Length: 58
Image 1 (cartoon, rainbow, N blue to C red):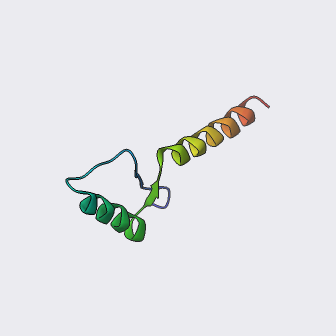
Image 2: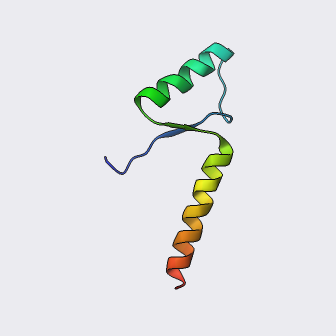
């Protein structure tokens, strides 16, 4: 289970109210996963892709 890294995209999810949305983000961040904006996730994925691509083509 150590390879599981749950995350929640804060600007790609919604809830019934702003307060409910913030509560879900806070709960996730404190207890079970990373809370990231879309841009941060895309930056991470791009960096990972570039690193893997470079290793495969070295």
